[in-house]
Length: 557
Ligand code: NA7
Image 1 (cartoon, rainbow, N blue to C red):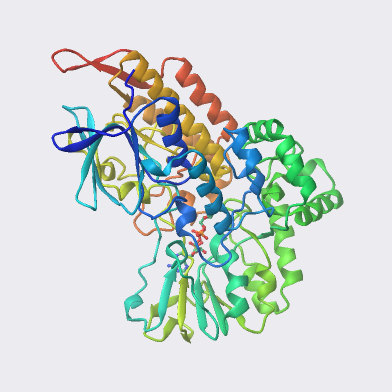
Image 2: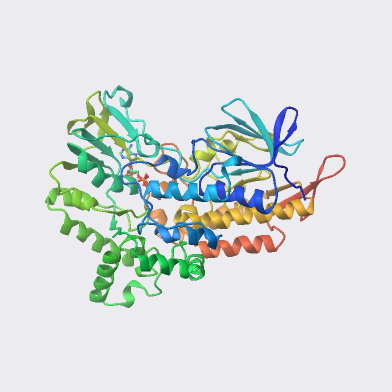
């Protein structure tokens, strides 16, 4: 087994590591911990930001908060970490999450092996040397046997190329690239484009200080109150005393949350009972609403009952009938796009300083130097907030400049859409692992649960390779094709692909291939499949050793 040294070996003047990990969010940090501290490998993390946090490092917009409940939005690999850390609210705010990740990084002494403020500009597989050559914007190139991309699913900002954007005389910001010093909205006329999870969180907070906030809505969205609150001393104690049980629930659940989806079906109960169930779920709040019945994502008629309930709530909350009508004009089944949860979103439209523009009726024509012009007229603005989401799941990967075997780029290999085996590896890119990549549950799951599973699977795989003297691992084309088919099959068995404009399908980015990217078969099932693949000697992968004449020889074919 290769035992890592504390500093990188130098070959041809360049630092050589066992593993290079790109990104220092939840995934990259844990991957570093396992490779360095469990396997004894020499691993280096390269991170663009000047601190840990990944997605949470960048998403500092007003109201930024996690939609997973805080006691489940933690690393569960260490009881010690769980016992030492204390979350303050049901849903953690962005600064608290960054504090948590710094606590973990310090506790595990991770920062000494993270190179901050450094952007990867290319990662090229050198077949002869069986090394990844990773170049960065500081002009350096390092190499490693293993390349692990831990770049997150939602970290490549999608700033729409609306004509005239650069002529705007005011300031504009994307929520995912928010200035660290914050933005003062006091006395400002603000326009916000986008009403996804981010936009829905931002509206009530921006409205508190802006002179006026105009929300430009393209697709109306469901939202469920988060019912956020400070955590009681009793709850905090309960969470620490029941770590095993919570871990078990999250592992058994479809979406990695600390609650299970109810077994009953929508039409098993009377209309009156259903209404009561939905009312109760509304009061409990958050993503638990989705767990009220087990067929909400399988049966359109069942889904309609939830959709109608949620639309009726908008009508009850929003006083202006025209605004209420536009907010409730939702065109997709409930939860087929990521369902937002909010704190005072619909209520914000009852303020005198908030108004809604329905872009379906009056689309944006251009951005002018003064503001946003729709077919209905010009809205004069001082600040535009783009809450327009991300080039999700593949955007950040494709920006890395990855080149695999025979000079084939990842962009070329994925030009018709991402193709992976288990979301972990792509054919033609030996020893490259993607954490929560397309084809894995990732964004359909409470992310830390998906991340821990992937990171641990990758660490186990690398451990096996090092022990057995394996030089490379790579999936077969057949395994990749089989997995892509399976990902489509399980998605098509649900209503999820019915939201034709969802980022799950890549439909929010012009020109992006429309492929349902996350694995919709459930986290627990996915974990079982991955475990079985490993138990069967990495079925679907080719593991090979170099022979003396440097030709590769498959060892598990
Ligand atoms: P989302 O969910 O992709 O939402 C982006 C929003 O921006 C959505 O309402 C889009 O409308 C809108 N949008 C995007 N481009 C445009 C243009 N060109 N014109 C008008 N409106 C536009 O991103 P979020 O950041 O809110 O959430 C991402 C995830 O982060 C979330 O699901 C959680 O998992 C955490 P559209 O629906 O495309 O018509």
